[in-house]
Amino acid sequence: MTMMRMLGTPRRCCDGLTRRETLAAGALTFLGGGFTHEHLLAAEAANEVNPAKAKNVILIYLLGGAPTQDMYDLKPNAPSGVRCEFSPISTNAPGIQICEHLPLTAKWMHRTALIRSLNHKAGCHNCLPSYTGHEVGLPDQHPHDTDPPSMGSVCEYFSKKSAAEDLPDYVYLPNWLGWGQTFRRGGPYGGFLGKRYDPFTSECIPTGTKGAPGNPQTVHGMPLLPDRKMPAEITVDRFSRRKDLLKQFDDEHRRIEKTGVVERYSETQQRAFGMLGASKMVDAFDISKEPVAIRERYGDTLFGNTALIGRRLIERGVRFVNVTFDLYLQPTLIDYDAWDTHTNNFKILKNNKLPIFDKVYTALLEDLESRGMLDETLILVTSEMGRTPRVNGNAGRDHWTFCYGSMMAGAGIKGGTVVGASDESAAYVKDRPVSTTEICSTVYELLGIGPETRVPDKVGRPYSVGMGAEPIWELIS
Image (tube, rainbow, N blue to C red; front, side, top):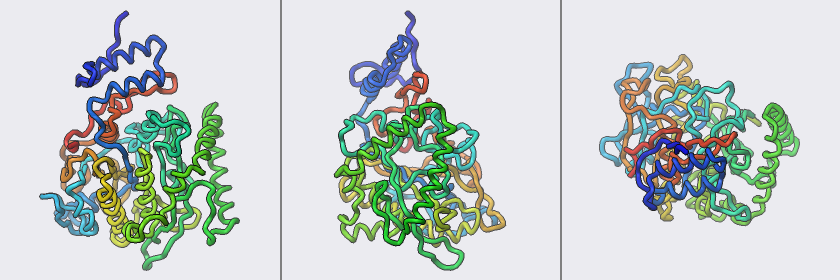
């Protein structure tokens, strides 16, 4: 019988086999009808050339499309109408400048790598590329059971934990993606691996504090375990109306999904409810046990409390935690724009988004470092897209996927590194284009999973989690 060779780099595994030979054996097993989860776990063990640099991942997701040319890729010499209103400041990494409204982040650039040439052509507000690396336009932005799995779902798939253990390997905070718009967005799910690899997802009840006229509200609140006791200020009628609306949405979405999804969804719900009373899970969500100084460092915002709980989950054994800076149109108009700044871009960034992000991002890095966890925890900051180079008539920036940025810090990251460059207007890539697939491959590489690792798709064919993309070697230490 002729052996089918799978593509892969010829690096040698610890048992003497090359990774390419390991994949060839996996392909032969597949052709013989024995491509199973157990075979994949064995292949994964063989694929680990070196120990993983990152034990954990915290993905900070800035929903809406963060304007990175106003954050860490400023163009002070760009023409009026394109140029950022903010000034660049120096950081503690030689030669790297970022926005003046990120002064705390500037002090952590020695542990942070910047990507300034991220791009894709999969459509605006399409979250699937940033979670899975799958850069293909879709007919809608909802999750489907034919989607590739997210990075967190792949971590859950290869989990070595038993079903009886308190914590999963993948937790999504503070609510499912799109909850604030009652629009469930695709990306952070198990896809064709199945609903059982979806994340354990918290709930939240956001409240707002109004700022100066014309500024968005500051979003307060806390990630909550599902069906926990509601805060006193939230009436039963208000919460019931909200739940009814979401139930209608989910019912309709499940109706159009393929046969079998409801059954798998129920299985996932049962698994999730089984963890609600678990001691480690309940303890992780109880930030009252944190010293007041640490809680104040993160700030009394939903984003700050979410990041703090994210750290507590990682500390207790969760491998992949998502922390979303979300927007909240529903249940009341608290913060509709979030990072989708079509109007008043600079005012919103200066008075709301950048100070909150600066405080929370650096509090997380400092907290992890003080606990000896930063060298084993990878931090990824990203969005589904960026913003237009030209400022529109409403002092905002519109949707743009042709050039934007991302940040990585912590485990396995070469701090003080800049990968790629945008042109003089931050409109298009000038040097070293980076795809979302490369970012996902980098995460897999640092986790020790290896981007060439195969998982079975819906019909059992081997699927490479890295989709053939190389990691971003320039930023790996």
